[in-house]
Image 1 (tube, one colour):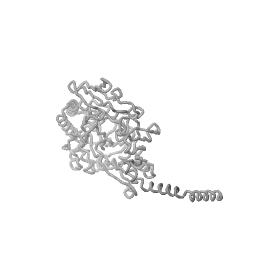
Image 2: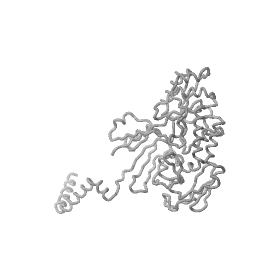
Image 3: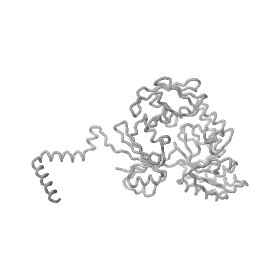
Image 4: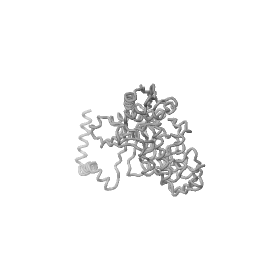
Amino acid sequence: MFTKLHFKIELFWLYFKKHWIISSLILFLTISTFIFRQQIFNFYNLPIFHPQIIGLEGRYTLENLPDEVTQKISLGLTILSDHQKPEISKLVKSLEVQNENKDYIFNLNDNIYWSSGKKFTAYDINYEIPGLTITPLSTYSIKISSETEFSPLLSSLTQPLIKSNFDGLGDYSVIKITYQDGYIKTLNLKPKDKHQNSIQYHFYFDQQDVINAYKIGNVDIIKVNSLPAEFNNWGQTKITKEIETTEKYVVIFINTQKINSKQIRQALAYATPKGDKNQRCLGPISPNSWAYYPAVKEYNLNKTRAKELLGEEKVENINLTINDRNLLPLAEEIKVAWQNTLGFPVSITIENQITFDNYDVLLTYGAITNDPDQYLFWHSTQTNTNITKINNPRIDKLLEEGRQTIDQIERKTIYQDFQTYLLEESPAIFLYYPTVYTITRSK
């Protein structure tokens, strides 16, 4: 073996001596190109591609992918402005509103293509929104109608249009998907702009799996709701903190059929610790929304007021249910606060599947909608989605008017009144918006 190696070395040396000028030039160019590669790419305006490998928590299918992903893959007919006002997207050339705000005619741009290369037409629009009728008028014109005035209509069309094969209209196309147990495990996106990096999403069952994936180098960017202490001293790591106010909030829903006394519900609210003021959530409408109203009852921690409201009311016990183990420390804190302040026993139950008819109070996440319309969540007729069972004629009337009023100034007044009366009834205790930590590996 040594003889063969010695022979190869001598053969290489003889070749180098014979062609030393060419060999030296090749070696020089190779080393120079490696050292000055970034400058060379910048001079010719060529990017060096480093795929972004992002780890996210959650089990997803095509139907429930997070907005961060779907908005890269495709677009809806509308988009939201900074204050959550709907505007037409680049798919649409113009919009006409007819028939007393019941018919919306979208004239589409004729130069839009799916990632597969097929031209986008009105016949591709596949929204399934209850109460809306979708009728193509021509190849590049479509009518979307409602039987009555429906003010959230434009906001409902922000949902990105994605075909069943992940074909989209966005800045990125899906080039590879892997599955595990029926859920998406990895999703690879390729940019249409050559100056953008490709993206790989890796999905994990829980937050600890996401953190472990970062530690062992499987992903370079992760987003988590709590920051592990060791990351403060983790080398080559950048950490950014953001309060997320556009997707969800932490809330205690109260079953008003079981706890039907408004005074008891308000007592619970005043006895509940709320945490950091900068993260406080005051109601179900995002502070980013044009309809947000901050002048509502805040129910800051007030043990004296909580005891006054409870008064002679008798509460044998309350069961606090959670459906996410990450909320267990908070549930324990609330349990202690209620027991110490109000004097009745509190138990905690962890359930993956909640039966909304049987719970007492539920600590969970509430969803923030694109439009301030809250009809599904608080109107007394919505038995499947009004999980607090709140039944208040005044709130019902405001919710009905809110979705049938087109003028935005009038709508804002309606939703200010709605937020005021909802907080007065206290079917829910709004706590805070989650903090999102983005942890990025420096290269």
